[in-house]
Length: 276
Ligand SMILES: [Zn+2]
Image 1 (cartoon, protein in one colour):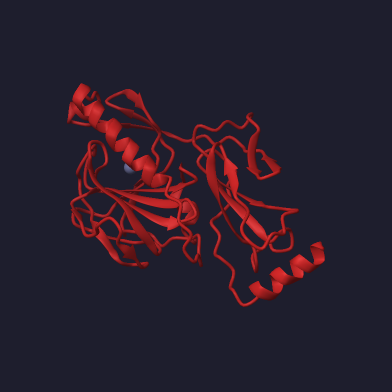
Image 2 (tube, rainbow, N blue to C red):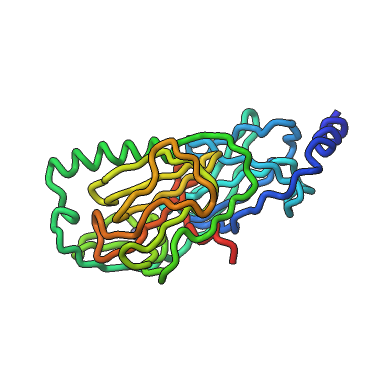
């Protein structure tokens, strides 16, 4: 039976090209690529990790094709620890995996708007509402035709702050840096790094003018601190379409694009998706 279903799958999937994969890095803030061995179903199995649905894509014509027809692409949170067992599940199967530690550097920044370091009660209430809106967008689940899990850079400029830095604002510890900062200059162009649909547009307390794009299967990208937004919720974007302009709205020390990539509602290192 397994031979028949596998042959059927091959027959109907041969013409399609390989989906470009992100770079695997089994560390906090990284990505695990896990072949769903022993699952030869013709439709993508549903998989879960830490309570979130996981991206599952056909492995055909990739380096994983020999191992299984389906491949899970999993985002690992920055808070994950190397000594904790990691577990992805499907209906009826468990896929444990291990990760390694990664030492991210510290960054100390001085922010002049003190409310951006010690928000008042109203600011916190506002942030709570905005956070819920962002998380809802990160949890978007759509199933477009997918040809790539790689991105072009959304802006040109110096990488001023890498992903994962342990952050101190005015000497107070805060959450680690959940994206990549690109210092492209005030008004610099921001373009869609791949096709996707706009699922959130907001003017947020910390993130300033912000856009979130859903690329399908739990993969979303976020653009923050913009001076101008060129899109609306529901817009379907092609790779290279304008999203807006670089700015310095929200909690910033100068104009830059904060670009974050989320997989299974987990912020991961954007550069793992950019072909070298
Ligand atoms: Zn940033």
